[in-house]
Length: 414
Ligand code: 17E
Ligand code: FE2
View 1 (cartoon, rainbow, N blue to C red):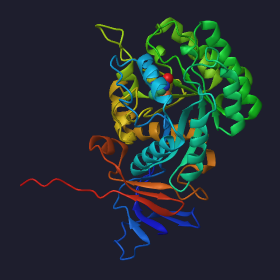
View 2 (view 1 turned 135 degrees about the vertical axis):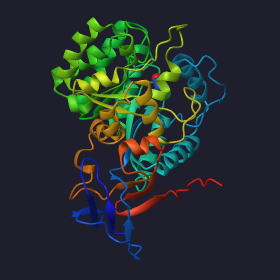
View 3 (view 1 turned 90 degrees about the horizontal axis):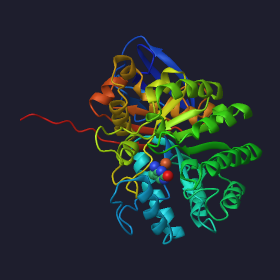
View 4 (view 1 turned 180 degrees about the vertical axis):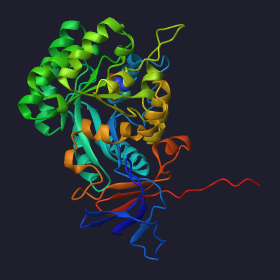
């Protein structure tokens, strides 16, 4: 295939023809009229539907995917019991088991039009066998998607034996980003020192940062201010992401008005995992029950970059999931009171451009001349309509080749 006709582009009126050559977009031409379908299998007729850059999954745990119930189910539904179940499953992981589950999950993501993925990989494991398996997966899946790996200290940096050394070794093995989990460290001081440690490590080795930060309903979990301030001082804003920050849903407004000043100065990115957080948070409440999400619309209105992610697929923290990021967007918009007209016009930003920005994909992403010919044909002609119809990516093109087709079946009333 080398072109798409009758394509609608987001934020543009009219229809377009998109052409590519040697895996790169070579022309984007406005069409004065709708073109007749051609009997040429090198030309795809978009029929007026949207053509967009691929969906992005900026936060998932591929190493734990497809392990729910092994060896036991998370009965309380809390983050902490999830971590305990995972510690038991982790003791049984093998190289082949990790790779098989990761590849199977990557196939689910690709079937939903995702071509860029950031996965956290647990490095609180002496020997780092899981990380070594995932580094192989990163190479093996290149024809399907681009994978970024975060060194994620699930059981802490300061409160896990040799935590600092494991993080350093993970960076030397070639991870793309450095992670953290300050709210899980044994003390507030350890949480703070873990953030300083991981930021220095990332700066020294030129890596991105993505921290599980304040993933709790505890309003006194305030590590985001530390992460943001260190980010500001180091001038690393575009390269740093705070994931979850669910405690912000429990901070009072007076503290948030001060916090947001620091966040704006730092300019870091945010990732919210709405299905995961609505499931894991609020667990210590009776009624009223907190939603347990960060302040997504407020961060967005403050000019900060926010995106949505899946986090889990059938793991100790979340028993569902199928790779469909549009389902996550749907849930996120509902939970965050973001079904207003303006939000629906631009809803896909939260699973495309914003996520690409958080992953620092830069020139590797977007429908523009000279960029990789990576794109999706959607089943609808607007963001609003895709959500309303619970639509899908129906064709996924990568480096100019079709890698996924989804037949669209319509119900017939009889
Ligand atoms: N680990 C963690 O600390 N938090 C999560 N939401 C998941 C794993 C999925
Ligand atoms: Fe996570």
